[in-house]
Length: 423
Image 1: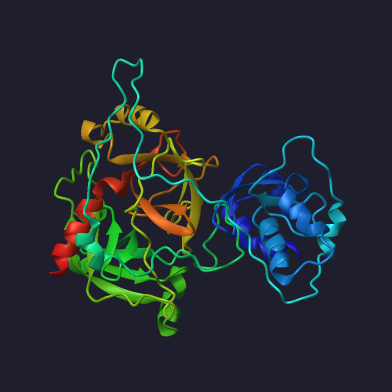
Image 2: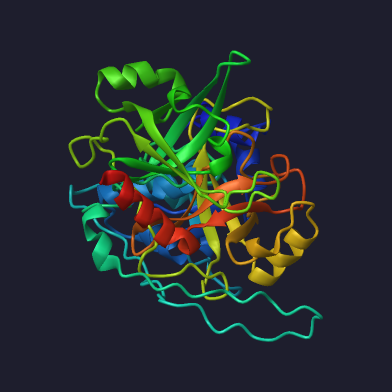
């Protein structure tokens, strides 16, 4: 491959120089594997599963695609002198080495494909009992919520959060294959100033989009248009013509009754669309899952990271035309409480209803224009929307965390209002 193949990746990182330099600068950076697990960019010799593929006597087409993918995800290619790959299980010190020239010699001899097994994630249905600390003020206690979900079965989509198969590896880059089809672009027309704003939402039902209350609370219902299935905004009209994208107007805003514009407490809302969004295999658009059967808890997760995506401001200080993906770490409840107490927006009621996140990689975070975007947890190969982006510092330039609404604390509100709106 030539450097021209990596123009998009180069632009995403705003780096100068050759592809080789980019790869070196991405060493140890977080990335997302084709099976949606998180990985890290490491030298090829430190990734046993890829070494095994490269050294195999027979390499099938699917395996070849996988090798190319993990190389591209970290800015390398098969001609790099020191290839770097996106690896799920990097080798510990004391490793053996492989001749890097074998990477360029990967060939195919059959059309048989293979699949990569994903480790079974740990699951939980409740949060642990909070422990007492020696701090003057104990850590906030998380309330428990019991919901009879059988009352809402008719509201839940038959399919949700399913990722289409693919080989792309993400590391703060575009959702190139448009895998996250539940992301919704909200175009907001401001009549008074004759300008256009933007927010992001998540399709959770053919009639409902989940977003942030602050995107809507001063907005007229007829001022919002919603775009579904879109990746590049500049190609939306073409996308409509080919039926890969859909557009709807808003029929109703359902803003949380406790929303406070000063503190951003209860910053969550639903948009009921004018007519159902066509979902399923025929359209390629499906909703994300709501976390009904588990609570996302940072203290239990082996890897407390989530994905977010949107069309917000980039490091060039311009709004993105492409749907971008970023990997975020979720802070512990205690760390989040400290962040909130240092904020002039602090409200004690927010301690258990929000999540605090920071970019896994320095300088990478959600930005202006990403309000309402989902925080996605990948669980058992499904995408669950566990958070809604609310407020934060300017585009990853501050060590302060981004604050997002914790969806698990609003499940009853979401389902009850969806049911009432349909009656």
